[in-house]
Image 1 (cartoon, rainbow, N blue to C red):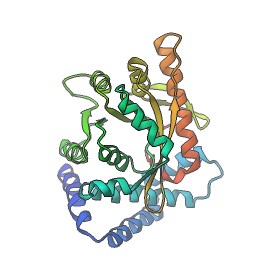
Image 2 (image 1 turned 90 degrees about the vertical axis):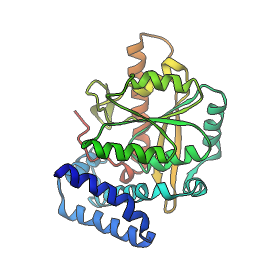
Image 3 (image 1 turned 180 degrees about the vertical axis):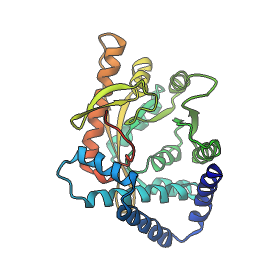
Length: 287
């Protein structure tokens, strides 16, 4: 029964939120965020602890702003499938220099590895990539119940992404991603939270955590350029900043993967420190 209610809730979200006038939907989601802040449930408390790791002297209003940012992500996510190609382009901003990095990487035929933390609206970023006529592939965590996972697959495929399951697929996702990179794809991977329990241990905001090795392994195996992507919200767009990560070329593979993943962690930290309210990490992260 609980699974059915969760499934119904997501399905209703995608249908109902699209139908509401944007000002009305925005007001509903911001009110929900403020109520979550006032209620101070487990997710809010975890967000507070995570943000205190980023900024030990933070004002508690940062938690409220973080919940509002997270609500904005969900509001936009529910409405993204109804956007036109031009709206996806207009709702995203990036410097001309960083745009050229992506355009050149795709044209060179090596593909591009984009690694990003849970910041801003990563689905809007994906819609922008696809709107530029660049082929994109990503990996999705298997959610429970299965029907919700299928809804998310359908949602992201409607945005134009190819999606691989993190587990349970016919082939290891890293093998498929490596092949797609050689065809000039953009491979986008969330990289600040390890879901396998076999990730690389890194230092992150003064503590120890584990992050997935996938982005580093892909870049080292294929030679595709690797970028840490920093996303943040402006009043009207999702804004992107790219940081180029250059893996070391000498040493054992595991040493190079660890060093590259640490470089990614440092790049994530630089962006999160600039706009911590847009980091949507409501789960336990540090060891």
